[in-house]
Length: 153
Image 1 (cartoon, rainbow, N blue to C red):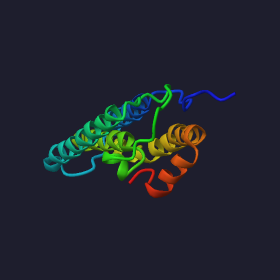
Image 2: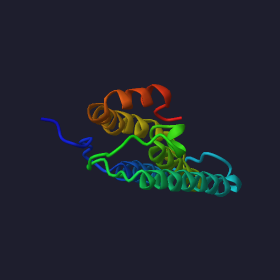
Image 3: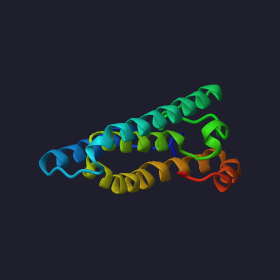
């Protein structure tokens, strides 16, 4: 019998934080920069502001549709408005954008390089599980939404 949630083992923000911590530790041990220092802070702040805007919009839509953000709780509906019109995972896009923003702000090439394995882990261990759950829970409604809206961007 399947559970009535996605079965995601670790909260996604902790996954992002783990990779960020690893990138910052590597950066401390072997500093590698991404951009000239004079641009790092400004670029980082731009990405962080964009991440906040995406997050706020995504949270508002979930609240408006009275469904949960938590992947360990049952979803009550498929949200396909607001940022969910453009990406099935706006909150994960926001986390990735925030992650890049912090990497730029800290001017850490290591953080940026770890984005690739981070997104691989998120796709395989979090998003794939979430999608499988939503297909079980909502069937053709979710499959139609999935065929119309991209996973990331």
